[in-house]
Image 1 (cartoon, one colour):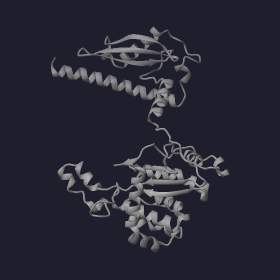
Image 2 (tube, rainbow, N blue to C red; image 1 turned 180 degrees about the vertical axis):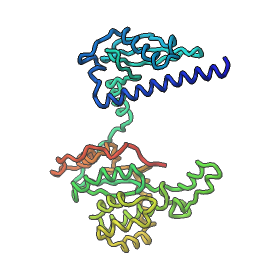
Image 3 (spheres, rainbow, N blue to C red; image 1 turned 90 degrees about the horizontal axis):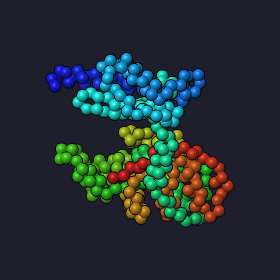
Image 4 (cartoon, rainbow, N blue to C red; image 1 turned 45 degrees about the horizontal axis):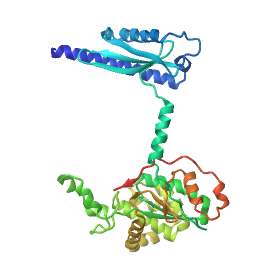
Length: 355
């Protein structure tokens, strides 16, 4: 076949498909406005056609829009399905025959390209959830549950976990201990270089990710994140009652790009002694990092967020109310605050940051 003739045929085919897609989008937009739902389902005063008649209406319309499709479109099968007609159609462009399924309203006036069986999709989602959700181990009970929250200060999923646990901390107060901890990696710069080509690896410096040349103490999102992790540990040590207010404020006001100049702004507003926190960072950083590494090893922490309740990995949902239930179930005797319902909206996807 000459290339010019083939190009013309391909052009007509693409033009037809583009037209169909555009019409489908318009139909979906109308769906959103609820203007033709009754017609699609054959309700109202619309004239009901037989399946064959509706199919011919569709073929006639497509041929009218693009005469080049005449004698190339065929209805292979059409039947009623979910209140509309589902048609298997073929398009013969000489080089090959393609088939697809479209749906047509029972009055023959509306068509759309793909229908979704909502019940089937619900079953698929339920099956996927049951397969992917790890089984929650029994969490031991205690008079005062201890929650150890491992995050990275600039992991978005870690921030979401903080947003989810913050209402729980404020609700339960001193009846529960929620400790902040951070994910620390070793040899992180070396591992990054191993994943890169030689040219890319030249730009990776140990000091960009690690506190020490030996790479014992590194953070996934860089040295700025590592330093902010320790600042937050310092706030927890010396201003425990203001820790949640500070992390909430710093998450809102500061980014990893400006954290080295921004970290003090929320402290000033909360009347936290900034010089004390600076001294803590300068003089206690190595002790903090060593302790974090040991805790990471103890619990097998590999990513952010990891939540440990009374020594057991929490694998439940991430909405404030789900976190509250996880913590409250760890009490020997639940305080009255546990009966209060918190937000059931999860802060985000159930993902994480890990090396």
